Image (cartoon, rainbow, N blue to C red; front, side, top):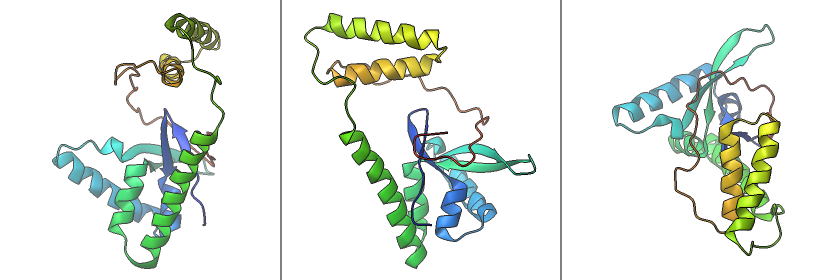
Length: 183
C-alpha cells in the first residue's frame, strides 16, 4: 500500500482502520484491540476519544457486520507515535501525505464565488437561496448549517465557534471501498 484513502464523515476526514492495519502490517483485530486500549486510556483521562477514533462497522462479503474504527488525523498520529522502525516511518509518511494532499486540494480548489460580497444582505440572500435548494433536496440540517458556515467563511462573516451542531455518531455508518471525498 502506498497511499491512504480518506473519506469525509460529517466534515471530518477519516481513514478506515482496515487500511491502517494493512499499512502498518498488523492484523486488523490486533489493531482494534490497540485502539480500544487507547480509547480506554483517553476515557480514564477525561479526553474525548472521538476526536481520535470513531466506532464504526462494515459488512463482509457474507453480509456479516464487523467492527472497525474510523481514524481521524489525530488518531493516525497517535497510532504512528506508537510505532517504531520501518513500519512506523512508512505509516507516518502515508498519513502525512494523505492529509497534506487533502489540504493542498482544499486550498487550490476553486472557491464557490470569486469575489467578496459588498453587503451582508447579499450573503444572507445567497444563504437563503442555497438553504431552500438544500431543503428541497431533503438535506439534513447539519449539512445546511455547514453550507451556511462555508459561505460565511468565504465572505468573511464571523459565526459563533459552535455554529454547526454535530450529530452524535450512532454507529450505523457502513463504509465499504471508499475513496477521497466519496462514500
